[in-house]
Structure formats: C-alpha cells, structure tokens
Amino acid sequence: MPTYRDEVVVLRTHKLGEADRIVTMLSRRHGKVRAVAKGVRRTSSRFGARLEPFMVADVQLYQGRTLDIVQQAESLGSYGAPIAADYDSYTAAHAMVETADRLNEAEATPQQYLLLVGGLRTLSLGGHAPRSVLDSYLLRAMALSGWAPALDACARCGAEGPHDWFVAQLGGSVCGECAPAGSARVRPETRQLLRALIAGEWEVVDAATEHASAAASGLVAAYTQYHLERGIRSLSHLSHLETRR
Image 1: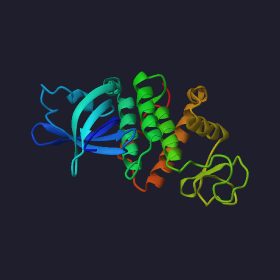
Image 2: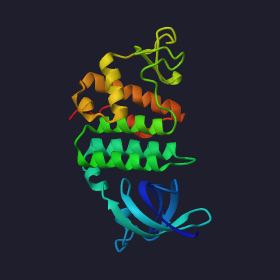
Image 3: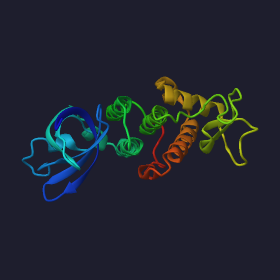
Image 4: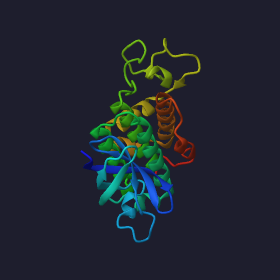
C-alpha cells in the first residue's frame, strides 16, 4: 500500500534542504523507516516537535521509491524534553537509540520497538540511574537479537556455573578451564547485578554497590560492542556517568 500508519520512535534526524528533515524511525510493525518530513524546520510546522529524537508518535507515511514521506504525526510519548533536561539521561538515551539503529539494520521486531520505548520512558521518569537503565536496555536488546550472554553455564563448554570469568568474545561467563589468560574476573555481586539487569529486577539493581554497577557497565559495553562488530560512539561519553543517583 502506498500509504500506511504505524507507531514509531524517532532515532535521529538530518537536515535536508532549507526546511525539511530526513527522519530515521524504529516502527512497531514496519521495522526501521527513513522518511522525509517536509517543512518541519519552519516555525509554522504542525508536527515538527513531534519528530525529534526520543519522541514516540503515531505517523502516517506515503511509501516512496527511496525515502517515504511523513504526511501526519500525532504524539504518543513526549520523552524528549525531560530526557534532554538531564545530561546523564540524554547521553544514555543517545546510546540506546544508536544501538537500536545498529541492531535493526536488516529487520526489526515489535519487541525491539517496545523495549526501546520502555527504556526511553523510564529515563524520562528519572526513577533509576541512567547508566543502569542503559545497561538493562543493552542486555535485553542483545537477547532479543539472539545474543543473550551466558551468565550461569560456561558459554564455551557448557559446564554448570556460576563461573568467575566473563569473556565477551566467547559469549559471556566462562569456566576457569576455558578462560583465556587475562580474562576479566567477575565478583559474585556483579554476576547477580547482570542477572538483575537482564531480568528487570530494579530492587536489586538500585541496591547494587557503586563498584558492582561500574564493573557491570564495563562488561555490558564490551559485550554489546563486540557483537555489533563496531563501536557505539555515544558510549565513549559515558565513562564519567554516575551509576547511582
């Protein structure tokens, strides 16, 4: 059909000409969509503010040859302003949408869309540390893409755990026999936190020590970037983020 409707979350935008923008969106039913929003940079635009990064909208699009065209946009979630008001949340949100953009190059699922919307909503509410929200999102997004890290049995030989080493290149936790020299050693509290992050157990996440949170964040970043086969630019700005509020 040349015209279709869908729910979308805006990942990024680029200027086009004097008044237009190219908007990259993750949609609920049509995967990743790139479309032209005509005239949205004019102050008189009816829906320019609804097509900013981190915003969730119900859009009507016309299917074009190379780029679709946005015909209508109605706001479903205005998360941009509260996220932009807090630097840590803003930086974490950028890492989330960049990851979503990379993960869904070929084909997206409704679960990936809902996960990203939920993560942005949580950031906008400010109830949890932004870095913890990001780490939880990254682990869940990787799991939905078929790259869930092993956190109990050895990722290489299958030996029952828990194990004290974590190797991103091997798929997560590994036993002492399989761990290469120089592998990262993981404390029990960090293992528990990784399980809580992927399960969404926020009572455990919020109660974690600063050391465990920092260690988990490092492992999550290494694991995500290894399996994406390229770095996430936004993660380079996250080293200073507080892991606790």
